[in-house]
Every structure is written in structure tokens, then in C-alpha cells.
Amino acid sequence: MKGQAEIMTHRVSRVWLGFADLEQATRAYTRLGFRVVQPRLGGKALIFLADGVVLELFSLAHLPFGREEDELLERRRHFYAGKMGLLDYALGSTAALEQASVWLEGREIPHRALGGRLLPQLLVCPPPLPLWLGPLTPQPGPEQTQHPNGVTGLHALVVGSPAYPAALAQHRRLLGPPLGFENHEGQRRAVFAVGEHFIYLQGAEREGLSGLILRSRYALWGRLEAEQTLGVPLMLLGDPVFALAPEAD
Image 1 (tube, rainbow, N blue to C red):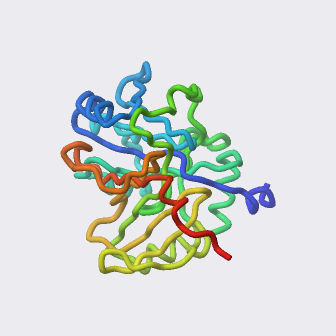
Image 2: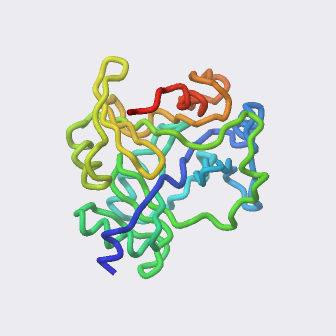
Image 3: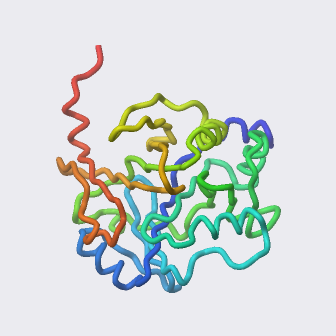
């Protein structure tokens, strides 16, 4: 099992957004041109992207964690306290989550399995590292991943930390070396590749997600107004923009 874990690949699978009024959030994101799916069980709504990433909209009154006594869970609950909008994100892997647990142990990353010791449904790591989740079932139909606004998938997540050197070391252990570093709005940030997506890690006053960048099939580039997104820092990046860059020799 350890050998399988060593070659395990992973990708961003979920992005969690929390709102005081889930119905208001569902209406707002429908107006923005997303196809929002409401499961039979209440407390959340889903936006399925064509690249396999799921945006999960939660009511802040129905966050996924209960009140189990556990240090990592308590740190995660404190991590969410007072937040609204972007809450967290999760990775998924090509292997079962019990193999992902072995993989994390090999990198000396603390974590807690929830949902059963042998078949965990969720792995919790210390923030600002992501969660690990099993695949969402049932899978969406093709029509549920087609959005009138032209959004085709995730491009990148922006993660901030007031303890940037420590967070950088944690992310190196989890994701491997960064692709490189870049200067953005006056500060240096690390760029990590996770499958076809990117994680931008930078210093920040508050720990956690601070930006969501989605790809669109339209030639768009810019940040949506906070009033439209209910406070979520959301930017659209047009896929045709990539085609404008000259090919490398």
C-alpha cells in the first residue's frame, strides 16, 4: 500500500463557500450565470464545474463538522470562526482515502480520518493545508456542468497565511516544490501546481482562502463585484487569453 501511495496523484476536488442565507446565495449565483443544483438533503447547494471541481455552498448553520473532541477538528472550527464566503478547499486523489492517509503519514503531516478508520470519507489536516475528501456521489450529468456564464472550471486558489515561512514549508511537504515565485500586488507568492490547477500561497493577515479564480470560455479578465458574489473574492479568467501567448521555441 505504501508503494501505491508514493505514486498517488491528487487534484483540487471541492471548494467550500459559506453564507448566512443559503437561499439568497443560491439566487445570487444563479443570477451570475451558474447552474446551481440543490440536493434533496438541505443545508447546501452545488455548482459542478466541467473540470470535475465542485463549488459547495453551505449554510453557516450547517457546516460539515460536528462537536467531536479532537485537536485538529477544534483547530478547523476555529479556522472557520467568523468567516463568510470562501471557507476551505479539499483535495481528492486517484487512490482511496486510506492510501492518502498513508501518503500523508509518509510526509509527517498530522491528520485525522473521519467516517471510519478503514474507509475514511474525510481527512482533516491542520490549516491552512486543505482537507481530503472522497469522490462526490452521484456524479453530475453533462448538462449540470454547462453554465450560461461560460465558466469551464477552476484556474487557481489563493491561500494566505500570517506565518508565511511555516505555511510554505507545510505546502512543500504536501505538494512538493513550487513551480516558482512571483510578485503580485507588492508581495511575493509561491505558485504550486495541483493537477491542472494552481495554488498561490502568500502572506496575509488572516489564514485561509483569499481568492477564487475560475476559467471562462469567454475572453474575460477581471474581478466580480463583492455585492454580486456576496463577499466572495471571485475572478474570471478567459481561456482564450492563454492562446494569445506566443508558443515557446
